[in-house]
Length: 269
Image 1 (cartoon, rainbow, N blue to C red):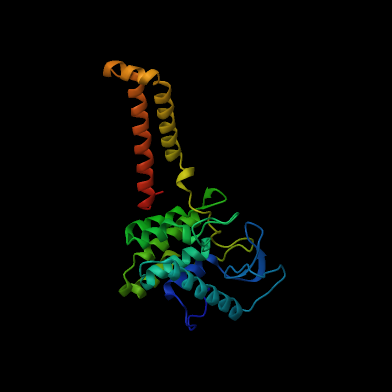
Image 2 (cartoon, rainbow, N blue to C red):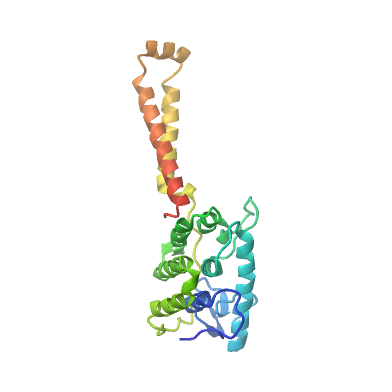
């Protein structure tokens, strides 16, 4: 089992370093990842060209620098404190998906990352259970669910929920989850787990979309069903059946959208 040098003063809990290292794998000769990006070491892509080589010490130093930067950025993105296991789990997620864009308006072409995640939002409002569930929202690559990402997100969620007193136990559990340290080396063409796609937005949710469609249909029906002085105040309050159906459609659509938003807030897929 290849791991980085534990003697370095790692910026996150060692159990988090183990998770990241085992998920990414280490190659000392540059290779192309599944998207064709030149990659080396523990997943470094910046400044990498094919044919490049590293020593193990250089790869470990790269990983230390990246984790140190991410730990700083993750802390800056949090409004609530995080214990060492929560921080390590969130840094592991950010290492895989990126930090994302800053501010309130998405720059053109910017990719979502940890800053835009439900994990961060749930943690910031103090809902630890929802934050742990929301790791699973980042389980796709190329639009498809990837088993390796599903497993990685589950381990990160478990680490996030691990009490601080159990640091050693958590490290042992991570090692065991990889088959007692007998994990196979990743293929040279790709890391053990690919970079995850961003979690889907509510606007792309089929349930939310159908809810909005129901609302629109109800509004249109209501509009077509009324006119002529509100049809003489709905025929003396006898009420047009079309309006009743419209009201039902609007209500059902609104409930569907609200329910889907609540599920996402609570970290469900």
